[in-house]
Length: 184
Image 1 (tube, rainbow, N blue to C red):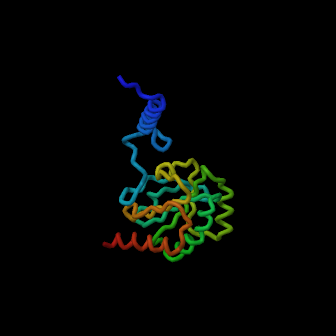
Image 2 (image 1 turned 180 degrees about the horizontal axis):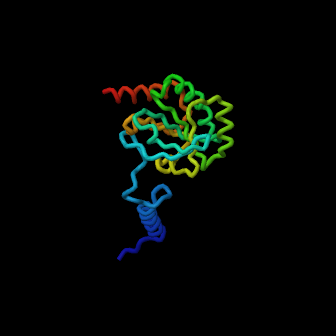
Image 3 (image 1 turned 135 degrees about the horizontal axis):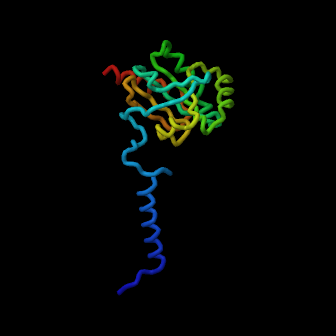
């Protein structure tokens, strides 16, 4: 009977261990077959619970019936900082709530005052929400800053853009595609 060499046996055990670990743990979280996968195009947007700069509770449900651009960001994130003016410019192109641009600060990973100072310094006038406990980021399975979701009026995700900085043209084109799809 042939005996396997020690390195081959060790490699086999490591491979089995990795496979079992992959079955038990996914992205640092326990596998739950009932938990939805990360939101993708065509999926319904998960819940968002946040507070405004004034401390008022808000949710994505408050914007039901309106297209939303939801940008997860943090004040320490260079690409987030670089794209903020582009989001401001786009928000100004859609007055009267035709499209809602929301900056959702990952406050559980950020300093709320630093975020408020940055928003003021940039002259941001679109709504900034604060994800104090990180629940919204977890619901959206955000793993990188910035991450932007384009959400149709019916709550369906039209597009997801991970990373940045996004420029005004890229954001505008994604919004126009989202709006065009709503008309079709």
